Amino acid sequence: AQAATQGSAVFIPSAKTPLLLNFNENSLGMSPKAQAAIINELPAAFRYPDDARAALISTLAKGNGLSDKQITLGNGSSEVIQMAIHAYCGKGTQLVCPDPTFNYAELYAEPMGTTITKVKLQKDTLAIDLKAMRAATEKFAGVSVVYLCNPNNPTATITPAADIEAWINSAPERVFFIVDEAYHEYVTDPRYASAARLVQAGKKNLIVARTFSKIYALAGLRIGYGLAAPEIIARLDTWASIDNTNLPAAIAANASLQDTAFIRQSLSTTAQSRKIVTQALDELKLAYLPSHANFIFHRVNSSSAAYRENMKKLHIMVGRPFDHTDGWNRLTLGTPAEMQAFVKALKTLRQQNLA
Ligand code: PLP
Image (tube, rainbow, N blue to C red; front, top):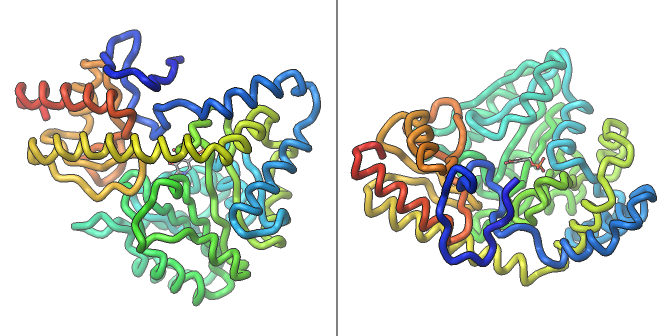
C-alpha cells in the first residue's frame, strides 16, 4: 500500500508509486492527531471497543444536535446502508435509486428479491430526477426505499435541500429514505443542507448515512455512522454486526472530529486541487459538472474506458465505469501536487489526440 503524499511538492507517478485518483479518498492521509490517538490506544485493543464506541456516539450526537439514541455506528457507512436495506427491503418491496449513483444499496437489495427501480439522471444537467423518482414510489403499492446520494457519486452535484425536504416531509408512510451524505463535509453551496435537520425535527422516515472514509481519511479503518429517530436506530441495530466498529477506528474517528485544523486543511487543498483541474479542463475545452465534493465529473475526448487505459499507461488511475455516461470520467481530487501531475499527463494525452 502506498503512503500518503502529504507535504510533497511534486508527485511523479510511476509503476511503483501510481497516482490513485479512483476511489475518492483523501490523499492528505489521516489527521496526525488521529494517528497519534491510535498509537496511544493500541495497547488497549485487547479490550472490547464499548467505551470508545460510546465516546464516539456521544461526540457525534452533540455535533449533530441529536441524542445518543439517534446514532448508530457501522463498519463503514456501507454497513449503515446495508442495515437499512436489510431492515426495509425484500420481496414485495422496491428500491428506487438514481442512475448512475453509488450502487451499494442496490447491491445489498438485489439478492433479497427487492424490485430495483433505477431512475436516470436528468439529461443535460445530470442532476438527480426527484420528480421521476417520486413518481416511481407513487406507482408502487408496497414499501419503497429511496436511496438519495447528496452530493451524488459519480457526478459530485448536489440536490437542493428544499426539494429533498419537500418530498420527505410529504411522503406516505410506506416510503423510507436513505440519504447518503458521504461527502457532506465538502459542500459549501447554500442550496445544500444535511437531511440531519429532518431527523432533528423528529421525522421517522429516513436515515442519514455518513462516513469517516472521505474527508476524515480513514477509509482503511472502516467506520461510518447513521443518524435517525431512536426507534429507527433500534430497528436498524438489530441488523448490525454486534460491536461492528473496531477500537482504533472509533478512537481515530473521535480524534478526527476534533481536529478542525486538519478539516480546514483538507477543504483548502481540495479547493486548490479543484482549481488546478478546472483551469486545465477549461484550457482543453473539456466540459465538467460543478463539483461539490473531493471529485469532479468531466468529459473526455474518447470512450471512458480508452481514457482510463491511456491514463493507466502513465501510472494514473482515474475512476471506474459508470452506466450511461460514456465519454465522462470521475476524477478524485488529490493533493495539489498530485493534480499538477494529472494535468501534465492530461496535456500529454491531448498532444497525442487521446484526451
Ligand atoms: N457512499 C458513497 C456515496 C460513497 O462514495 C462511498 C465510498 O466511495 C461510500 C458510501 C462507502 O463508504 P464507506 O467507506 O463508509 O463504506
